[in-house]
Amino acid sequence: MGRFTRKELEEALRIYNEAHARASETGDWSIWANIFTEDAVYIEHAYGEFHGRAEIEKWIKAVMAPFPHMTFPQEWHCIDEEHDAIIFCVQNTLTHPTDKNRKFSFPNWTRVIYAGNGKFSYEEDIYNPRRDAPRVIAEWLAAGGKLACEPKILPKYG
Image 1 (cartoon, rainbow, N blue to C red):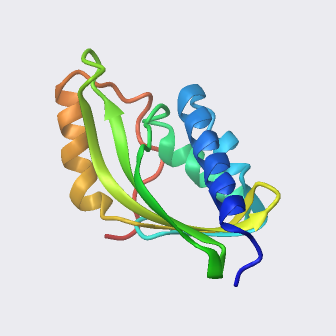
Image 2: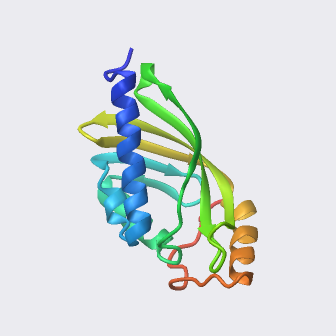
């Protein structure tokens, strides 16, 4: 058995989702980075491994710069009480520039480990951005979407 109850892990997921939503609404991705512990590990299969909140924050601000208001609606989640982990599927989503009911998205599966006090010590994202992102972003741009800036970071792998 892990250190946290199912109820605590469900609350941790709420905190995670709220930080994601606020970062997306404001374009300030340091809000989301602040849910990680100082010594957190983040494994991102396309961009590499990040150690510590400061590295995670530097990376997320750079990678989200062209898409500061991308959203990440969750399709499902499951709680792994034995390992204090939460696993979920999100859609990396860009809203149509004129038709708010139309979305451009691709899936991502994530595993986070809760460390307590509203902080996470680990995240791993599993998806294929080189396969999925170019098509979705091209469709969004063709529909009139605009990058906030040129990409500041490109995937290392994939």
